[in-house]
Amino acid sequence: MNDSKTRLAAIAALLLAGVFAGTQLGKIAPLVEWYRSEAGFSLVLIGWLTSMISIFVALVALPTGWAIERAGMRRSFVASAVVMTVGGLALAFLSDPAAILAARLVEGIGYLVLVIVIPALLNTIAPPAWRAPALAIWGGFVPVGFAVADFLARGMLPAAEPKFFLLAAVLAFALFALLGAMLLAAIGDADAGGEAQKAPPLTGGLAGQLTFPVALVALSFGFYVVLSVSFFAFMPAFVGLPEANIALSAGLIALIVPIGNVLTGALVKGRDGRFVLMLAGVGFAASLVAAVPTFGGSASALATTAAVVIAIAGGIVASALFASIPAIVPQGKSASIAIGLVCQAGGIGTVIGPPLAGYVIETHGWAGFGVFLALTAAIGGLCLLPLARASALGVQPAPAGRSAAE
Image (cartoon, rainbow, N blue to C red; front, side):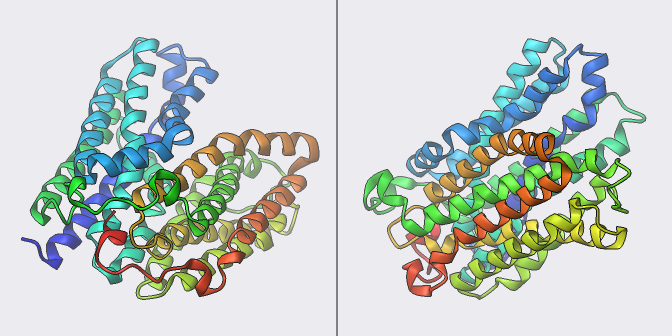
């Protein structure tokens, strides 16, 4: 059973489980009015309900990566999938506001582990040539998950109660998580991160895993998240204004992001870390150029094209930064901990990005917001400049062994 077809099937199942984990993040948005009118939630409480699932990522993703390293990746995946499923099932059937928030808290614990362990598993089980493409596709799990939540809501909510929509969302996740767990078991413990104690000890402890390239990629990812979350958080408000001149809806612009993910997945196959990081730099540069025309009152064709460029470039940046992980984690270091740091930087960006962007809009208007996004893109790209030389990475794309499997 431990053949390439089983591995590719496991990769597909893990990616789909990841997408539906992203759906759990986005499934509250279609139910805002229902939670207000039927459950009696205020908008502030709905905001907490939305963000609670990801707040743990901002707080403890790095130590969670260390815990996953100690416990074993397959064991961590199964446990976190069970936790998220239990929380999602409870969320579908509970009606008391305190109980709903508690259920969302349980989902958040599962989500925290899943967003670290799934890319770590992809890095473990993928054949060497497929590691970067698999991680590149993983980089789009949140926007694709939000899109799935939106389409699922459009298909179900006109005829079904919200609890059945919530139930369908979590059961779809559980199905692909179960399939992924079964395929990981077929691959075998040693190859699927099932027995961490059999791996050689990590060099340098927790602090020793945080190499200069890993820190720079994590910092760059944090600025990317500030850019992306701010862009999509305020795009719905902007497109409704007379001065927007954008011909596409905010939802349609968001659905364009996976083009960048898929494009990056195709481009990075078989390429070295320097090329992958250069691709991320190109994405940042495209966002830098497009940000001001999008929000600066440009003609409709230019503003619409610029918004589409930011969406695709965002997909490229996210995918390229994740795809660089096999190249920036040296032998004897842990990809789980590196991914934890990257995720924590992204979580912090999610928390601080929208409030900071809102302040900029209130103080300097939409044109100022465009400048803010351009500067954020510039800083994110500058974080990668020290890695422009191959020797700065310190490693080449990892061969089969611990650096790829941990």
